[in-house]
Length: 189
Image 1 (tube, one colour):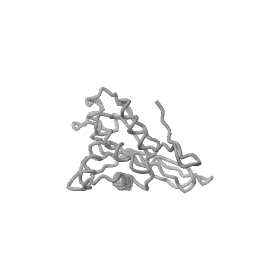
Image 2 (tube, rainbow, N blue to C red):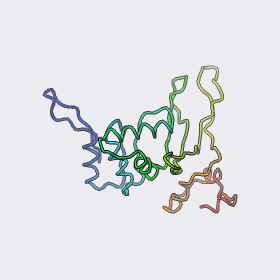
Image 3 (cartoon, rainbow, N blue to C red):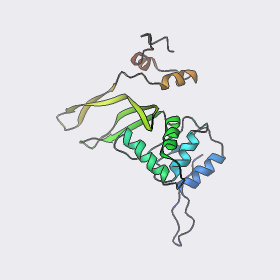
Image 4 (cartoon, rainbow, N blue to C red):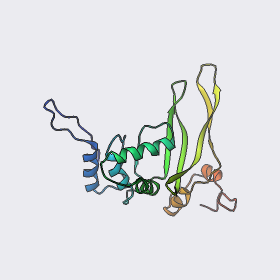
């Protein structure tokens, strides 16, 4: 089901905010929640929903890098006005978020995925990350368009074991990029 925000009318009434929609969506018992962009206090509700069985949910937010996205998410959660310690917010983030997909606008105006980063946990009060894929720019072509490759970093995603346990097959091309601990691509799948 699709729900949309609504601005207030000319009398300043009738607004429907994203946080209200998220709370109402949770009452509908969805399997997944997709929010186009979080910009405010709904970040707390989204984070809590992702920690209570709504696996596969996703949202977007604007940030310069995967690490900046996490900092921005912390700030948005704090905007909810709930007095949560930063460590508790970070623990929820580490538990709820598996991957960050970073899109950037490049010099030529094109938009590209520039990184796929995994949250691997929390050490002390710091969220630990590892890049799984990264865009490597090779310069520009004759028309000024950015040329490059999206490459695996060599880091084996911890998320693979969860995908396997859920019965989600990994395409053979990807399985070859991430051999199991014994060096075999096929034995993990």
